[in-house]
Image (cartoon, rainbow, N blue to C red; front, side):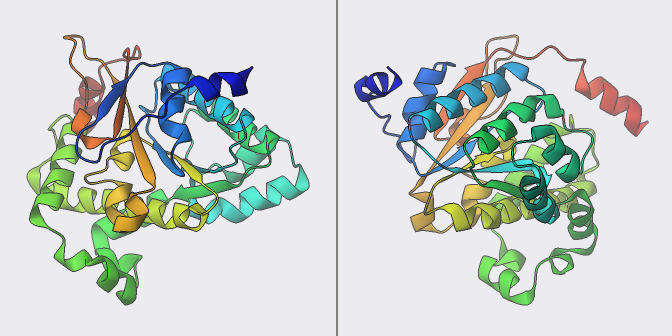
Amino acid sequence: MLQALLGLLTAVAVPTAAAVELDPSPTSILQAVQSHRVVLLGEVHDNAAQHALRAAVLRQWIVAGARPAIAFEQFDRERQSDIDRARRERPKDVDYLIAQAKSDPGWQWEYYRPLVALALEYDLPIVAANLSRGDAMRVAIEGWPAIFDPATRRELRLDALPADFRRKHETAIAIGHCNLLPADALPARARAQMARDIVMAQSIRPYFGRGVVLLAGNGHVRRDIGVPFWLTASERQSIVSIGMLEREDDGSESESTAAFNVNVITERAERADPCKDLTQRIR
């Protein structure tokens, strides 16, 4: 029945300059996903509805025959060997894998468990895609040489990044911290964010041939300053960047919709005011 449904769907032609907005339904998002080899699927980390929607989309896609690798921001790259070992020791044990490989207790693992389970159920590669918090702090404090060798720095032109690109990153960091950070703190934090994007791009590149889905925060999947920036022009042609955004109380969107190929707008998750909490912590 699912195959018949998929046969009736018309693939979404994702433009390179303007984004399209899709209904927050698995069927709608599946149209955008199924026509691309590399999918960058964003999230608001604490929005349970978005996580459930993404899991439903990927399950439909995989049941229909897709076999992409699944790359997780939630697993640091150093934990890849732990993931592989856990799969050898207990091939279908989701909780065991997460226990062996998780490194940041701040993630709400109940949201990611269904996605790990899906990868194990269909024996898909699970990719630890993120830079660790420790390495991100090192590159923020010490600069690019802390984690990138000279050849990588030259190839990526890390010492000559466009001013507008750096400014956009710093603006995103400022907004993400409720404009409470001093201006002189922004460049280092932006550098750490860029380093995470670079590592995520490096982590998914080996899987472009078979197909890969990167599950990461919306900031990382932005096509203007996120992971796509660090891919080659030919590699960018095979990707689709899907922003999972929240609707504000006034009806507007919480992030720039122009930053993605596809926008999916959901209702806001119920949460305490993060700016109030951040203000108290800074004080």
